[in-house]
Image 1 (cartoon, rainbow, N blue to C red):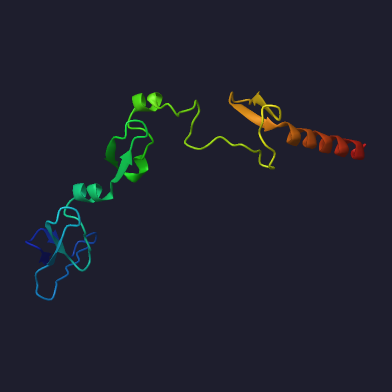
Image 2 (image 1 turned 120 degrees about the vertical axis):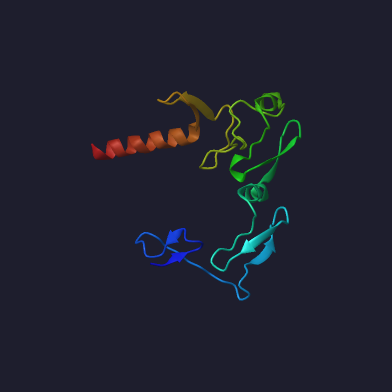
Length: 152
């Protein structure tokens, strides 16, 4: 029965997979860590770029700037926010209620301008308030009436 690497793993066990790669010199090559510059062993079967998970995380962080106070923080890309905390969010003078980071629409999907005279608000079944264009609503009502008359 044969063993690998200091008699710790049996090669003949059915669930054991052992891959041993050797570099030409017999010693793994060393490359610098992309974050801290520390030496990292490079095996042909595993191309590592960082010396630790901490360095890998630090390398992937992006700089996030708060809209209100201008404070810069380093966060993972999935956690980028407009504000550093809730206090800054509510202190922003340019913030509107319901501001989701996108500008309010000025025209309906069919191109009619959203003015106070051409827009009406209504409450949906789930409690949210929505806006509709009167011109589009009137055109849809006329089309429904035409179909009703034609079917009769």
